[in-house]
Amino acid sequence: MRPGSVWLLGAVLGAAAGLGTLVFGLLVLLALIPIAIFFLATPARMLGLGGLCIGFGGAWSLSVVTAGQACVADQGCAQPSNFVAAAIGIFLIGLGVTAIALVRSRRANSGDLPTDQRSMEAK
Image (cartoon, helix red, strand yellow):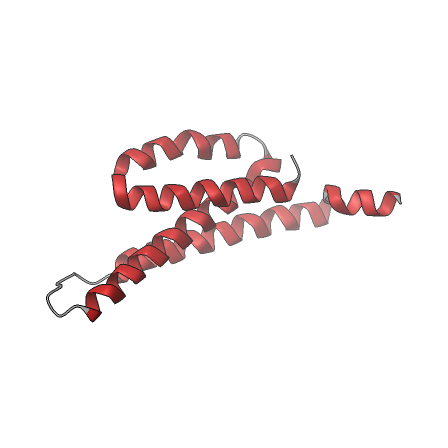
């Protein structure tokens, strides 16, 4: 798989898991563990883990903040602070960005170019 495809797969699975966790609870997180282990199996799949964290954190944060805004607009709604939940989502986004930066740094140091750049140099 191309690096961009691995990242996109991780981001889509992460977003689905982030929303699924809010709807179905911790069972979705248990299903996410084998996917995370799959992405950790080889260093080339670390981009997928980064995408997974970014997708999960983004979907989680967006959902929690949107629910909080909807509750503020409704006078009859009482909801606890969303700060901790939003902070968890932002932490996961940062973790994903860090994983991607590590992969890019290792590739730059090893001289390994992404597959799309190799094909451009071959022409």
